[in-house]
Amino acid sequence: MSGAIFRIVALAADHDRRPFDSGCVALDHYFQRQVTQDIRRRVTACFVALTQGQRIAGYYTLASASLCLSELPAETAKKLPRYPSIPAVRLGRLAVHRTFHGQGLGGALLADALKRAARAEIAAFALVVEAKDEQAAAFYNHHGFIALSDSPRTLFLPLSKA
Image 1 (cartoon, helix red, strand yellow):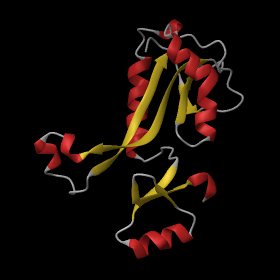
Image 2: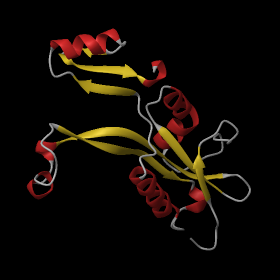
Image 3: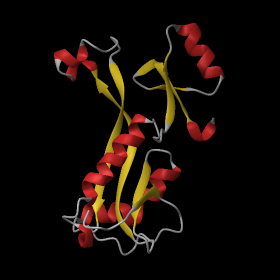
């Protein structure tokens, strides 16, 4: 990374996002205007690479996700439990400030994301459950869980209410 030293930390309120310019309008707009709302709503976690002067050099987001078992390659799927979907972590966005393009920071951010995902340091909007029967669904309803409209036995509880 051409001698530059970065510290990768969770995005905080005192980090100045305004001057961030990756060269991609959509990534910059999201980072400058939307990411903190998504963090408050618990739908993503954002991590930033800071220079020694506390300037944001890059960022990425992680969120919980799932993969349909049927969509995975057969050799991978056969090693997994036979659930319809498999928990995953989504790397939603990754961007590097133009000043630091070509210096290996993107790879360093990706490596950090992989490390955090392996340690399960991710955000989650809700706790989701598949009720095995109506009695179980009633139990979860009693505790504030909400049924999905198209699947009454799939219930969720926003973690903000937990």
